[in-house]
Length: 529
Ligand SMILES: Cc1cc2nc3c(=O)[nH]c(=O)nc-3n(C[C@H](O)[C@H](O)[C@H](O)COP(=O)(O)OP(=O)(O)OC[C@H]3O[C@@H](n4cnc5c(N)ncnc54)[C@H](O)[C@@H]3O)c2cc1C
Image 1 (cartoon, rainbow, N blue to C red):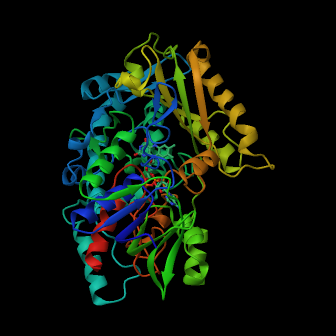
Image 2: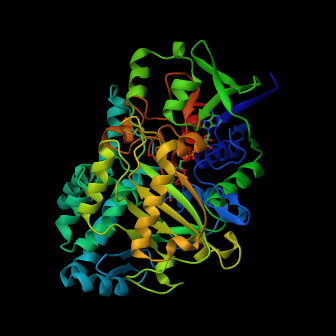
């Protein structure tokens, strides 16, 4: 046994680091044990090629809770987000384009090109989404009530929760129920007529989702993406200075400053359990680290199916974790280019389009068909593509004159049909994606200097996320809130006493938002030593 801590945290993702920092702030001795050579999990900046600093996984920030930024004084440790403006650029095959800007008047003028009626509706839609987002946002930093409720106290907690709905109009309550159950496409059909406007907005409904825009539940994913903001503007996303690792490094800086020990290249092999209670961890290589409390930032499957020996968990719980849906359908292609894509729909480079999220997905039907392929285990013939160019905001990320392009795409199913493997399909799929971009921006391929294709299988291997699911588990209603990761265990506690979950597999789920880590620390402190 080398050292003894109050708390050992498995995984140095941003949530593990946040949990550690809050616990250290409360006077606990804390060690963070990260399997990789760097901290941050899916929120990292890596020098993939000399001189190119790439946000290999997560690439945009919005969800990070302001309370956490303030509590941990993250700007002091280098945290800075540049708001993305314009927010969206969609290129259409008929040569038209649609921008969405920070300035609403400019956005409305753009929308009016496609439908004057939609331009009139848009501010009402934004206000509606904002009202609903505010209600749900109020739940992000709370612990879900006990479910199913049993004692009086549990029922009181539920009543308190219902109290949060006070003040909502009848329409808003109906709207909330609808948005949790509806498809993104149905939601948008209720408001808009233009295909181009609808598909531009629908992208947020399918990012990371295991479903198409017509799948029930995707309206909630759309709302989930509006749950934060940058510089006080709700729903706005931005680029983190220094790449997404800038978030994690700032949190790690704050944590270290509070006395947290952070160890990298320290993969945990097993959680030590004695008489039903966690008492530390064993690292790969055999080193034992004793701790009164263990919190896992690894996803629920890694935590309970790999790190805890099955004899410590009952069959029902293990069954629920086995059934927890965690297969991803997103892929990421990181590209270094010597020139920016020159879009037929808006020629010129550099231009405002390169500061936006650039969409290639012309219609809801296009995206739904892309999902159809994935549903049957095939990477989309024509995937939805989202391109971002962080070097438009932070040129220091690449050598002079060069840029980094992040291509996030749907859909690339983790499990492939017909005995295919990602080792076979990875590069041909990358070529197909490049061919599609070439159609919209001829000459693109000749600008490429390096590329890295990360299928869900590669995301799993690199980042340790089961199934390559970017949220540590599907964000569907049956796996959210009191059901995350499974009913009865949504309050960060687990069937093993003093073992907690502090990552995105716990409420309120994925995204670089810090809420699971923050909430878990609060529950640990509530339980005492
Ligand atoms: C390709 C991709 C793009 C994304 N884009 C965005 C985006 O633009 N914006 C956004 O907000 N969100 C995005 N997300 C989602 C977001 O990044 C994640 O939901 C979030 O970062 C998860 O944070 P976490 O701290 O809960 O877990 P993770 O970041 O997964 O961290 C868990 C950590 O635990 C470590 N670990 C696992 N097992 C062990 C072990 N046995 N021993 C020691 N350490 C272990 C892992 O190495 C990892 O560092 C994206 C994710 C991916 C994969």
